[in-house]
Image 1: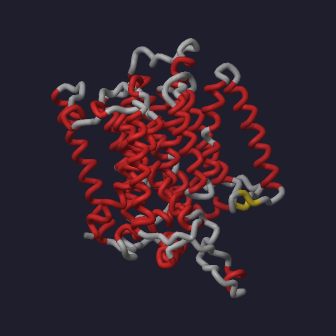
Image 2: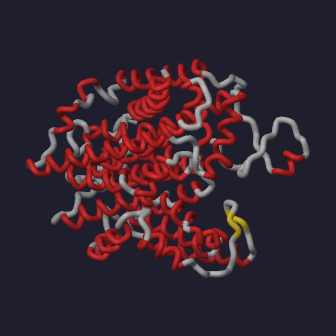
Image 3: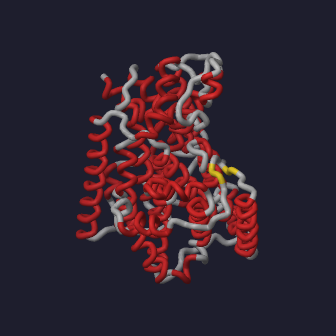
Length: 478
């Protein structure tokens, strides 16, 4: 029975997310390039992440309404909303039953025999990796340090009380204020603990192992989304699956799925999909892509404090898209102003997102080199990306790679500031800070690397939407 309810706890957010995308009419089926199953792969890949965020919002609404968490109060409305949205999308012809995917159609790929064999082997290898992560989640109780002193503490209290109650610092807690609870990070966002609460409510008991299944779902959703987005951007099936495999096989990403409980994997999934949806909007100007990108960008700050900055790194892509002639110059001026502001903040010892700024540019170069190039957390990712970007340097800041390139540069700039002029630099001696912060950007780097390779390997660049076609695209179904 518990196994069935775990499956239900994962399926309901997934169905809700897919239903929301169906109601939006996303993606535009006439723009798909990966065959009939292309839109459905995108919906499946983005669906769980969208649905998981919405489920936590629903739990917040129940708590505000003083309705205790329970299977009926939590699950039945989610199922009803998902069914209503899917039906409404069907009635308004935003999707149709004949477009439903099939296994046979999914395997009907334009591949020669040896490529099909490699494709199937890679797919089976990814499935095996997911199965091994599932075994770890099923057998191992909550293990990581931060997970059980900062996140799961809230999940346990909220599950037992059936509602969200405030956590406070030690001074307020020791003062004996009623209704306050204390842990190591009382100000952290509620999204991650609420995912654990949701799972425990579904299975009907507190289980510090079973409550971590959403992390595997995040990894699966992210992998499918990477493959679907790459296919939609004219990447051939085998290179697209290789890109998805590289994401699924990143050692540190798998560690965060198997030793679940940290917020870094959910942050990476939400931010990566937000950036890819923004990239799709930049190329197509479809309103649906913009809505999905905006939804996911707004979800970034709901996971971790740095999510605010990660969401802001999407703005350069919007600027270069809306202002193609002056966008890069505006970004260069903006970068200079941002650097000046960072120096001023460091000079005045301000604290940004909980990190004290300091005017002491002493990046931990040795630790960074060890983290990226000498240890096994990233396989050969950084070697491959550097080599690929060197041979493709002339294409990186030209369409169609430009919107994603400026997002990558913004993300790298953010990490550089964190690693150099904030107090986080002193935490890099144990190598955890650099790895966990980089994890948020790593899946997007892989997707960008595959797209760069595809541009380098393709004789003619991908066609860009002309000014005359943009109004036509924007006039599609909302």
